[in-house]
Length: 99
Image 1 (cartoon, rainbow, N blue to C red):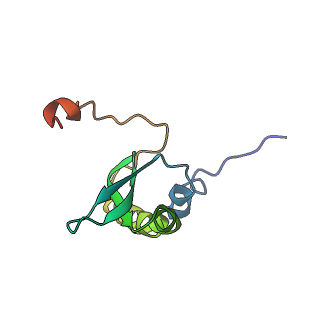
Image 2: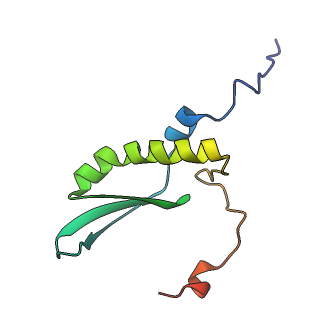
């Protein structure tokens, strides 16, 4: 028995992207008043950053912001790099913007 694939049904929508295993980059820093906070960045979405007072709050809530970010990216037709996918942009940002 052969199965015919419906490529329209396989369209990558918001739910598809929300359920990917994104590469989280976590850390802590100090705000302008010297108070600690926890942040989460997503490797595949360089413009994404979410901050909260604790790691637990950051992990519990970053997906709300991720959903909004993905909605805008989809609406604008931006290319969304998926986890494990190489970015076509081979720019060596560390050489251009040394820390």
